[in-house]
Length: 453
Image (cartoon, rainbow, N blue to C red; front, side, top):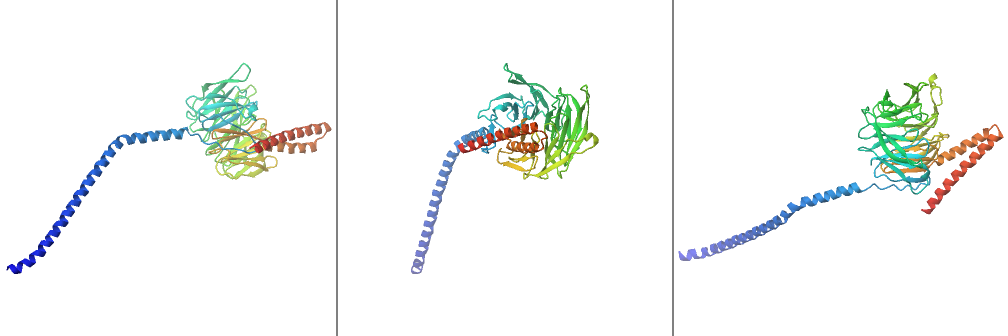
């Protein structure tokens, strides 16, 4: 028996020993792995405890710092270097929303999102430095601004209150403008946002237009004279004609509607009645403009065209305005149009560019691109026909109306040919010489400025 069992027990013991060694090795490895894992967890917990206390604070600080940095960063100014650029008016910290020239041509007023209204002197337009008088719109900001006929006051439309506010302009001892102070607010009557305002040149009434179909005619003291429904689905623009006789509006429908605001000889308000319409566009009209005596108008439409009209008609006899020219535009989206007071130049602004047209020939004269970050919000010719100003971002750009000088020269040459007397012919020749001299001076200064850069 002994000889039979001894040989078989040796392999069994060897196998048992081998298995035991493997088990011990695995146990040792598990123990080491658990210890390492525990130590790593402890290290991780130790590192995470202070982070749990300090990390949110650190992130909050960084977040606040980032927000502050974003707020403090001002938008970059577009560097406009066009030779027709006379100057750029700077002073606002946020977007300029509205502009207007005083009837005497001496001042430009601007209103902006930073609650500031600024009064600029037009005689400084060709200077490098531009002084201004600043007023503050209390607890609000203005979206539109218009001068009174005597330039002693102005009105703004308030963004938050959606009402009109009257401001007075003081006078210094030397007769120049002084402090700007608020006078009173009109009652809130508009249900939709006010998009356009105006003051009649005769000082008899004020107009405000809502984005719905409402136009309100007010006395200068804020009493409602008339509420007009334009029936244009929604209004896009409205204004008072420079002559003070008319109020007009455009909107979703493809026309411009013009009303006459009527007063008696004694100065009492009678009514507001339909005068005439501009019909010819195939889509809604974005904007329109009068010349100084309301004998010409220009309009720009969603249909991709602008039109030039003869409005010197006997509308009381149902005579319609005459379409003189139709031009095309390449802008997409909302456009603005301005007609110079003498009716010789049309400027169309769209996106962040403007295009100058000769209104007499309908010829495109010049296109100026990339003038405002975020797009153009307003444009207007000054009362002397010398300048076109554009508003957008934080700046107002002043351009020489070179097209106007050229159109004036062409018009005068035709008048010289038709002159009936030598005296008239000599007078027109002198006007031509003066216009050419002014144009040459502008172009030479522009070329010199460009070469210096």
